[in-house]
Length: 319
Image 1 (tube, rainbow, N blue to C red):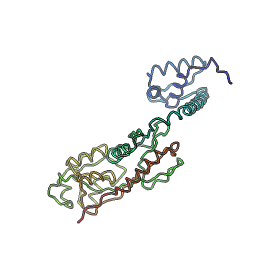
Image 2: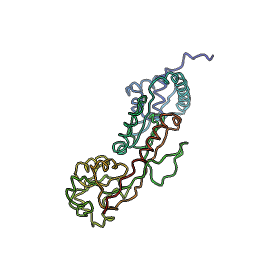
Image 3: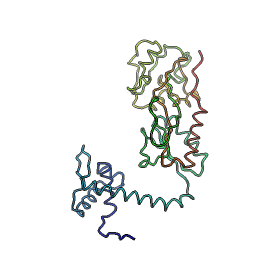
Image 4: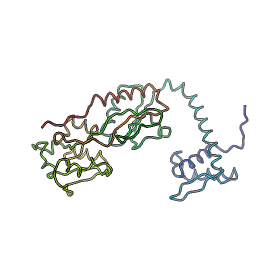
């Protein structure tokens, strides 16, 4: 059996160095390890003193901390050692986990979580009494190992190439865009009355790269003339747009499948029969390649695909 060198630096100092070198910041390393920034600094300084070498080029307020040549050598060794320790600990924990509750971590961007995914995650959890299900709001694809996510619903361009993490994406839904409003706002007006566009506030998310999200595009589609800019209220996210529309504050551009439940419940109605545009985005299920074989993950993916298929986007209103 190899002898453990009594002169090895303390493990906390090695972890502090590796986290700082990887994240490029003492502050970020402190947050990850749940210690103070000064503790990280002291540990790295003590490590450098014990080795007689400068391991990190310190960054300023806008410059990342980067490992020196000696630091690169140590970083590779520390990361390999921590990975081996992690695998050994996981092998020890695994038999005990079989008797514990299983965990499932799901992620999606903010509007999709709020308007479509959250109630379905709760419905799945109610069916799976032995599973702890949690939902995280992440705008982009997660870092699978850092974030601990099992399956992510990722918004991608409709024509984006296949993802290459070893597992194919499963398309959950394509966006379709059309105007919506609360029946409270309409009163007795017909849903095809174009005067609605100049009579009421127009609600819009600021999203400059997607034309179908903008009222300028829709005024052209509906041949409604120039956009009355004084009536446009802009929001930095989509959930507030729909919240305002449901409250009767104005007309919004609905996106199926995000607004499907609001339409099904009668809180929103579609306007202008036959008027819709294909969205530039689609939602895909993307699995953690390291957890793809977990039975609970397969069950959740099947559940969401079935939910998407059984809840088609609502039809346009009749003329």
